Image 1 (cartoon, rainbow, N blue to C red):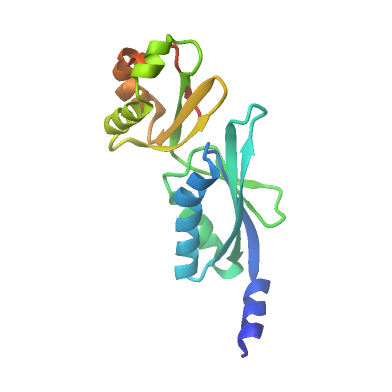
Image 2 (cartoon, rainbow, N blue to C red; image 1 turned 30 degrees about the horizontal axis):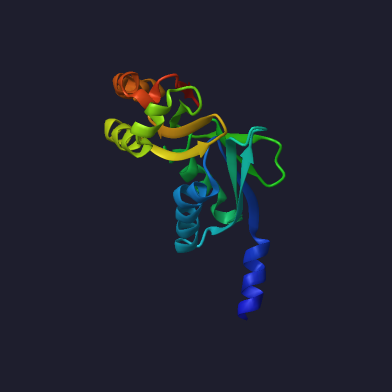
Length: 194
């Protein structure tokens, strides 16, 4: 069989799969955390290919969720769906849409925590003397083993840090004392995002 004929046959035997991630990820984070590893795994095991991705935003510009588009070989589709269902770092509330099917397959186990820092209402001395990188490093240390920072967003009045892990409550409990004591976190909001 000629290479071009083999390629056409593989394309004909694939089906479009949309992975909707209930994750607030900038495009570069979506690519690095999910798209590239998924594309590498699909290529290594000849499952198909990642064909694109997109990021959905709220009216204020904050990231709402994101999508990854794939063509998956039909003969491995059930195993591929089963595999994705077991990837625990996919946030809950995520889903798969396969081909033209109207039904969505719910997947995902990670819960999300958004820490929204007030960017306008604190004394100027707090903004001058506090370093957001110190805050991030300490939060990552506190969440080591139970959660990790996936992304962030900088709005006009707030900066959001997005963490995902096994349990929103456990993550919140681990960071609460530090958040209560660090001046840059005054007037912040902690929100469950997945």
